[in-house]
Image (tube, rainbow, N blue to C red; front, side, top):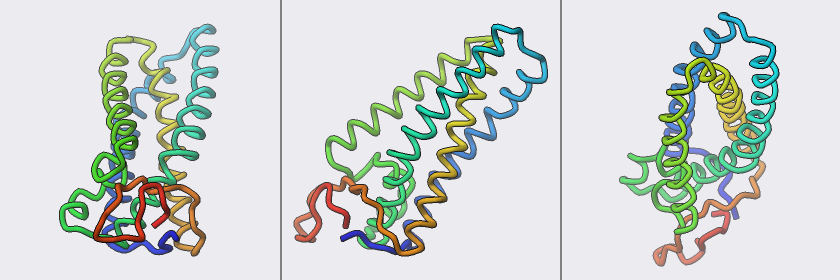
Length: 182
């Protein structure tokens, strides 16, 4: 059974994740807007529209709305119900599944984080195309922040999310199993 409340530990985790995503939006939006202000060729415009649509669907809807955002909120609820000082201190990392998660969640989360970091470093060298790529990323990240806030509202309204928190089995808590909504 999933907890239906968010305490300060869970809210700290969510605030940290939203701040991290917001910082990326804050950093990338001026690059995207500057690219738009400079003007795009017809080819760049077609690529930009296609890329923004792809990013909105793949990153925003599939990546954030269906996967990452509900799991962040469910893990924040789990942290509220099962606080430990270290996990509370590192709540944003906990909510993102980077610590105290099942092996599969840890591998997935760390692989995704490393891949995104590598892509960010590569995109810096794309010159004029960087603004187009960043425009799609800003849309996807904004969608993600919106989805997190939506799921916080769902949980605060007392409705459970059907997403497992992916926490490892804890012998001290016999009712908590990996994948269960705790």
